[in-house]
Length: 462
Ligand SMILES: Cc1cc2nc3c(=O)[nH]c(=O)nc-3n(C[C@H](O)[C@H](O)[C@H](O)COP(=O)(O)OP(=O)(O)OC[C@H]3O[C@@H](n4cnc5c(N)ncnc54)[C@H](O)[C@@H]3O)c2cc1C
Picture: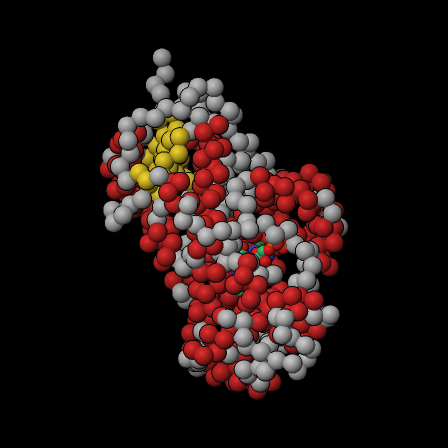
């Protein structure tokens, strides 16, 4: 008789049953007894500036997963450490469940890596193994290196290498969800630190985002049915629904990027080089997401509030609290900036083009430290994702991976003329806007541009 394998599936940034390598490894064998554990690690979320929208999305996704896991015969326990250390909480859970293996999806970031190292050591002391599975990216981006053996810091050569790797490995083959269980869920002894998930759900703010796995699959299918073909043209005007709007689900792992690419290839064929401009451009965006994870993994200081380019640490940012507040509240008098910031406040989401414009305005025209903007975004966004947010902010502030020099600065009014020529988006969010000149800007764009260039130049020259 084979011994029963008792495992723990520790769910974190991979809140799905579809294409989940950690879940698959934890529950793959016949007769396995797998228990899923979610840790409500509030201090960790606070340290990473997760706001109510992002926390709510994650907790609702956990609730949706509970149902899917139950169908597969897997019991989900939610634990709240309340002052105890994560390694101790997990060690106690494994002892209560007689589990000898813990499986989890690998996460990016220094804090995450340190936490996992201490968990591995603590569990190891108890004879329990921690297995981390590649989860958040399509390809093993941590293995991609330039000719000199260093991580890439510019997107285009990274993308070339990434596509060559995809050519070699072939299109991903996502793992199907676990089969439905026949027996009932085994509830063994209580697990220390367990709390009732439903008690948390009642306190969440209302949300327009339908958490769980069904919605992102529905959105993806609808996007692939047509909009993807025009993506290269429609992705920039913020008044159009030209993008997939999948980021809130991707950020909490309710859909895997491998599944997204496999479905894309299912429509357009396995040879991505033969795709038309729409699907190719969309693939490029998925590669940007992989790129920012690659950079964060290869350059740990990015996780520690530091810029990619060391010289930009010398930029003399302005302590402009009034300007920062006006920016946060969408009352800078620059119409497109105010529209974006109000969209963010109201919906928890902002169009990519407008994220670039609002971030540039804060870091360049107001010369406010980009880290303040990064934290504010993280706190507001429903799709807050540390590598993409940090990457986007450092790109906009010229402290990171933007290949263009610091003195090429977006003019927000010109951007609005180009991408929102009828001011459709602006009028939607800024009802008092009544054409050019109708708002009172808090800063003169021309003078602010010169000030930014001078300040950056002084920093660069030491
Ligand atoms: C200052 C700034 C901050 C940002 N913060 C975040 C963040 O916290 N979370 C987040 O998911 N994205 C962030 N982005 C990237 C981008 O704005 C969003 O991913 C995109 O707007 C999501 O919309 P979508 O799902 O319709 O994207 P689509 O255009 O349909 O693209 C599909 C997916 O590709 C990825 N993607 C697209 N553009 C980018 C990009 N520029 N960088 C990285 N990944 C990309 C996203 O996962 C997106 O869901 C930020 C960009 C900037 C400039």
